[in-house]
Length: 100
Image 1 (cartoon, one colour):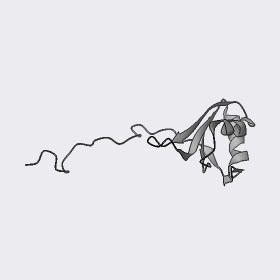
Image 2 (cartoon, one colour):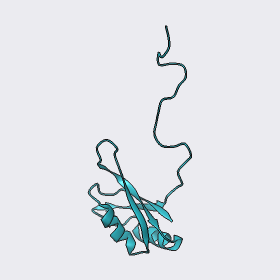
Image 3 (spheres, helix red, strand yellow):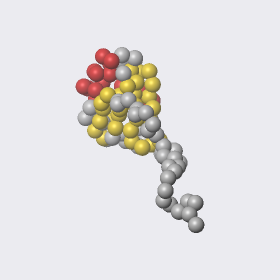
Image 4 (cartoon, one colour):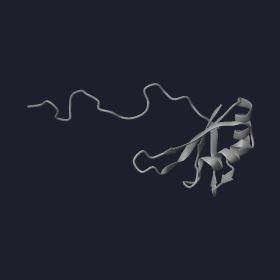
């Protein structure tokens, strides 16, 4: 089960999250989301458990809990939507391209 973890203190590390969430079951992975350009943490991430039971226990115990001086927001992560992620050039009319 994959969990979304929001409202993280920007100084929180992946090891700290692994320790906090590890009390509820086997943590498979921890990912903190960072700004591509600056490398700074964005204040949210994902924790993946080996079982749904562990994930549900972590949600119950940690949603709203103070960690690093901030109340965590913990819930089941939504699956990525197909085609989401990143902009890119969108063709079409407008913008002055190809006009004379």
